[in-house]
Length: 142
Image (cartoon, rainbow, N blue to C red; front, top):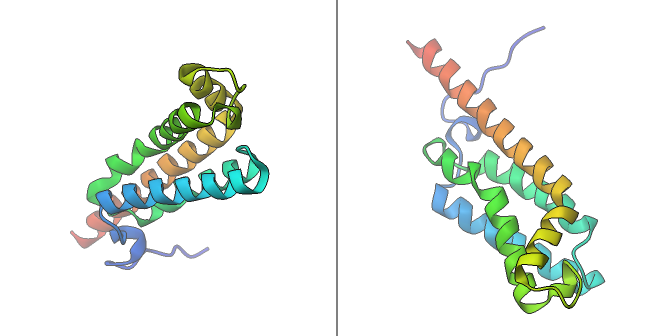
């Protein structure tokens, strides 16, 4: 079984987006998914969950190594921000219509916890693999 090594300067080791742009991209795509999901079914559904997991994985792949921390803390922040926004303007999309913002946020997190945990684990795992690849490549160069 042969081992493949990432080529120096590859997208896997170098990333393609600085942290600020990756964060902006993640927030923009997540909000777009929310709008599409709400237009399709009127509430957040499995579609949102699946897209959220893909967003988390995608951000971990595209961010540059110096900005791993920004993306490493982003998934729960995106989800809390989305549920806070929806709890403020349309609580029925994530909780009962009469719930206040804190209850809507907690209900949303409870209902979509599998997506949050899965997306977060994939994000952190991908960042760890990329960091390991960078460390291995640095040892090979020296």
